[in-house]
Amino acid sequence: MPPKKAAKKSAKHHDEKHHHAKDLRRAYEHLGRVEILRHLLSAPGDEIATLVDLAQREVANGAAKNAADLLRAAEHLGFAAILNRPSGKAEVFGGLMAAIRDEFDRLEEKAEEHWEAESAPPEVEKIYRASLKKAAMAREQGAYRQALELVRGAEALAHVKMGEKKQEPKKKAPKKIAASSNVRELAAS
Image (tube, rainbow, N blue to C red; front, top):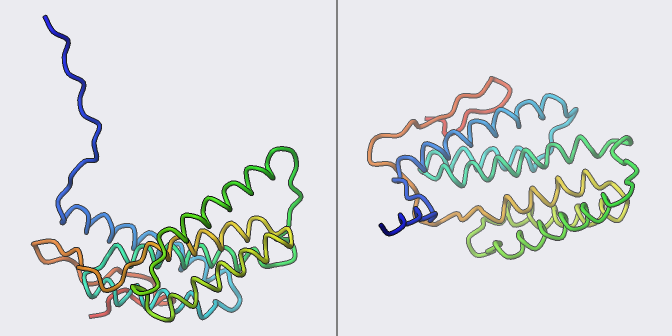
């Protein structure tokens, strides 16, 4: 008897409705974390507010994936802002420095590989460039946690492709993601 064929381990194909629902959930979760970070920051940055506003518009336009990536970037920028305090630096010992350097370089390369300036609005490009610049400066100053958060934020922004065909499910999708009164609702009706 011939051996059974191994199951193919190819990418699973899900319908658009599944992807849209997953991206809406991701946006909701990132928004919750951004809301917490904004409470911790004495003065939440304009960059975070800009990304939240853009995410609201993207959900309203049916682009939940873009909204999730915008909010993921806002989350990383929020952590970076918290780490910008005097206690943000930490000594790094042993092989950890090489691991940090490798991760930073990998994220920076991934961000540059995925970045498409022509599909980004000017405010996203400005935040993307500033995040990479601040990440490099933080790295040089030994603020490695902050540097990693900033480069992760830039990498998240590199995945935002505004102007592409929107992922809308065939059935009517929810038009807003609830947040507390301290953070504007996504996709206000």
